[in-house]
Image 1: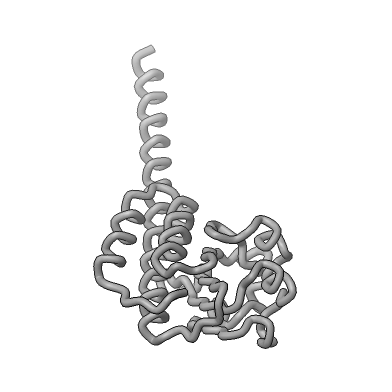
Image 2: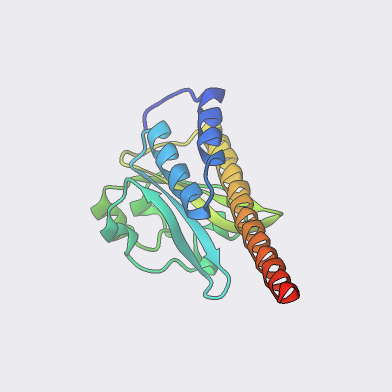
Length: 187
């Protein structure tokens, strides 16, 4: 990442883009692409917690190879603290940090540093947003704060998309029920 000053305009553009999404996966993709671009990072991933398997499942990514993305499972209870304890975690050197489960894959991918923050919705951890850099990066408090804000927006938007889908499904069910009862009454 390059040294930069992030303005309110960046959050406004990102929020506007996310607000047009109708699907949680689309929110994840827009978030990953926007964060990668704005921060001039190597890549960005959005993970969601699968409560059944205890793994962090990849929902959206931008800038990372398919090989790296398929390196192996990331278990929620063993994952980097951001998805476990609801705190951000900044790792300056992924090759020299015991919390990194796949350091050789990170090295091969050209990842030097990592910033991970939890995605929280309704006071529950639902996932993690991770930013990967090609050069070692000392993440500033402003970097962490902005990425935390993006993660919160992402979580809220994903919940809204799920509610929207549920709402649409409920409307369709009610319409079908109404149509079938009208059909029976008219016969």
